[in-house]
Image 1 (cartoon, rainbow, N blue to C red):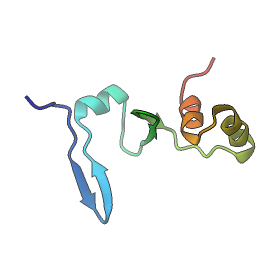
Image 2 (spheres, helix red, strand yellow):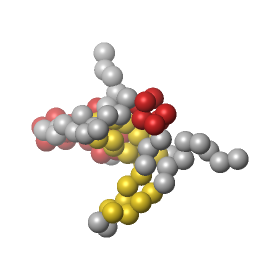
Image 3 (cartoon, helix red, strand yellow):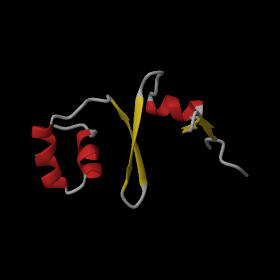
Image 4 (cartoon, rainbow, N blue to C red):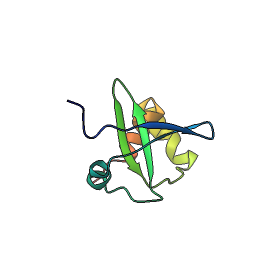
Length: 81
């Protein structure tokens, strides 16, 4: 049995694109024009992004705290108290 939520990868103009099943898009509340970011740290994580540039004076202290850009961006993409 195949996973009904699989994605097909296509190459268009030398770029790879993944088709996202509608059920996944609905669960992640993905809309046209949204950005999705990926992180790799033992496993692949995915989060919906607002595509906001983080100022260097904010990002550098985060990088010192979290040690890698991936962990810093994961922290930035979590709801904070």
